[in-house]
Image (tube, rainbow over all chains, first blue to last red; front, side, top):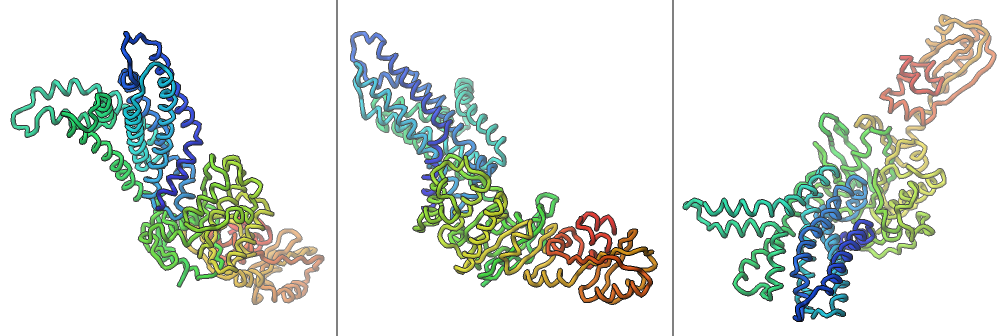
Amino acid sequence: MSWLVVARKDFEDSIRSRWLQGLTVLFVGLVSLFAAISLRLPTGGQTLTTNDFLSGGFIGLLSGTLVPLIALVIAYSAVTGERESGSLKILLSLPHSRADVVFGKVAGRAAALSAAIGVGFIVPAVILAVGPLELDILTYIGYTLLVALLVSVFVAIAVGWSAAAPSQRIALGGAIGLYFVFVPFWDLIQLPLQIALTSLPEWVPVSATAISNGLLLSNPNAAFQFLTNELLQGQFLSGEMASLQLAAVSMLLFWLLAAPLAGLLLFKRRDL
Amino acid sequence: MSAIQLSSVTKRFGDVVAVHELDLTVESGEIYGFLGPNGAGKSTTINMLLDFVRPTDGTVEVLGESVETAGSGLRERIGVLPEGFDVYSRLSGRKHIEFAIESKAVDDDPDEILDRVGLTEAADRNAGGYSKGMRQRLALGMALVGEPELLILDEPSSGLDPNGAKEMREIVEAEANRGATVFFSSHVLGQVEAVCDRVGILNDGELVTEDSIEGLRAASDSEATLILTVDDATDDDLDGVRGLAGVSGAAVDGTTVTVACESDAKTEVISTLSGAGIEIQDIETESTSLEELFLSYTDGEGVAETEGNTAGSAQDEPADMEAGQ
């Protein structure tokens, strides 16, 4: 299992990265800050749970904007950076294939960032638990795991892109582009898209809702928002939208594998 | 079985031909020195051996397997010190060695390897703080993991002080005694001549010569340059000397006469000059060093041409040889 060896090394290397440490601190800080603030909000006599905290909008916004950003920042140079510095030569001098390198890096960095996300959610959980909020532990863990899945998907996209990019500069430019496509741009086109879809001609064999859903869920970020909403409403992978949720999960898993694979195909043919 | 076999390998980068129809065979168990100036195509050749770079044409076999189809398993049998590599600055030296051990799935003792390459004291420091020489030692240590059948070392002595270069040679010899084949490149002949069984000289992407060190030495030893201080001589006075067997050239500059000839012909040269009425006040002999021979190959000029240029070969500046043509 050569890729596992690469993954372990990449994990150890990544967790020592100042960038990763700094972004983790920022993430923990923001989530904790919000947790602390939410303790002071008037509850109107009701007993609030951590689900209310998570669905308060702020955490969703934080996950949807900061998590992809962190993943892209940490992973865009995974392959190009090593190719330019020359450490990739050390890696490929050892019995690792280029596939081992790409998938090992996805696994290593995704694990490092998931660990950071885990820390980011444990600290506020403690703050919330000692406060008046009731801890819905299962949902809370589920939410954290979904965030970890989201970060892993963006790591996979960034590493795949990094493997495909011919230089560090292009890798950086592309990573910025990817962020804008997946985060603000996708939301911006939703409304005009919905309007356009209402006047769909008769001959189109699929319904407007199906197209809209397909486009929405093909963005990992939107798929994540959808899944977390369902989770917080207590109907994760069940209820009316169960099949759509499955589609969203499949889409996330598709990105997780397809992005590095596509990058690998280009990387394999390239001279170091 | 040959350890390395390149058959009419060509590598082009755009319009630039880095390696041109190279045939090269390294036999199992030998220490092969791959010489050439910077930019000759040595690293490109080595990168093709490792499948870092794919040949435009020709086939590359390492340990009997085609590198293109062999997959990563082939590298379990090879130890590599690449050129232009970098370490993982956030990981310690020990972590690097441990990573190589895990990667090769062997159970070497990291401390033993660190000791062999002289990094015991620095083992737990982050490799980012290592000097160039220490990084070189670390990469060598990683290459030594798992007792590889073949060691491919690209400019192993770069960044090392003379003492470090000596230790490097000792390790190369120890590995060869263990039975490993060692293939290493260098642009400095001195690092190669002490250890190599065979030397190949690459220039402009082509192998210009390939011989044992003894063979190269024999070629250089048979050549000598006589530098004579005389009372007075004209160019015409040297005609007799030029006609002698074994003399490849003669020139005069004021009171200095320079004659390039085979070592055996020296006495004949001196007596011929005396016979022409020239008074010889001082005699100096210079043998062509291996280094000069190497330079003559890599300047794109054969030994024969250097012989013909007497004034040039008396100096040690290769540029003069070209100018004198």
